[in-house]
Length: 320
Ligand SMILES: NC(=O)C1=CN([C@@H]2O[C@H](COP(=O)(O)OP(=O)(O)OC[C@H]3O[C@@H](n4cnc5c(N)ncnc54)[C@H](OP(=O)(O)O)[C@@H]3O)[C@@H](O)[C@H]2O)C=CC1
Ligand SMILES: O=C(CO)COP(=O)(O)O
Picture 1 (spheres, rainbow, N blue to C red):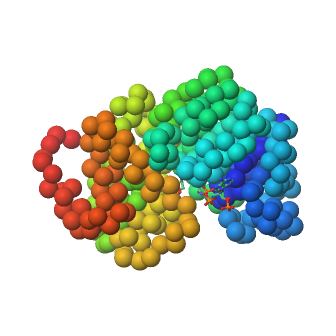
Picture 2 (cartoon, helix red, strand yellow):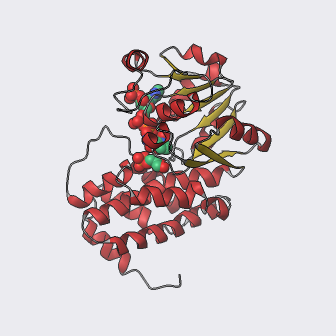
């Protein structure tokens, strides 16, 4: 079976490397320079430096090469997913597509599976999500992820096809829950980075993680997701990883805000757009998400971290 990965960023390259250890993988990049680098040096120096890529991985800048693939992973940032699907709709329209994005589309409030379903209704839409840093997956370190697909049979097949001896996939049919877990944890990670960066302590971070998780559950319930999905790898699992590791770009953005440092705007930080999309959706639905709202105010420089923390602490007292 041939697997293809569309998008040669850190995660796409890492998944291509992991899967190429068990069969042929085609990695598509929009950058001819990156393809040349990968083919000549067996390394994606721009996005995943220091990782040797296995021989089973071949890179191409020609999207038509993906025609032979039985499964196609879509590994671009969330706000780029619709563009990729539209641009290459002729080839992708009836395929098995596995989004790897963690985010909510800013203009529509939709997650990746919903965007695929809306754009290419004849395709099988799935999501691969859960706690995983690209460099660790690429090195073959032990990792467990969630494969979400509303079609239970297709999900089981994808679970088999994409699991490896070091990559253990659990499956669910709750695509909404898996989408929300992966997207919302990034917003909470920005908040956690900010309090740690500002020296407010580990207790403050634990409070944000726990009350952030309560926000995730509230939104999940409103959208019909199952609470046990949020308690799994795609929710609680990824929240834990992302809020506690400097390998996370979302967490590092928060750290830089808390410290008052600059942050390179070219780095992919999914939680920034997602915070705005989720805050708007929460307001429209009347869902209380004060941490998410605070992250938006922080990113938009509408309020300082000191003001926001004080506001969160002095809200009316309530039952847990
Ligand atoms: N990095 C990680 O550890 C993990 C990432 N993810 C998720 O994977 C997704 C991708 O992140 P990641 O790979 O890290 O991001 P990167 O910033 O490393 O790479 C993004 C890639 O997407 C490409 N790209 C952007 N827009 C388009 C487009 N319209 N058409 C084709 N290619 C495009 C970029 O190309 P170019 O280089 O030309 O700009 C780049 O190769 C995110 O949603 C992220 O949350 C999930 C788990 C772990
Ligand atoms: O999703 C991730 C870990 O599971 C990667 O997190 P960042 O996008 O914050 O780097």
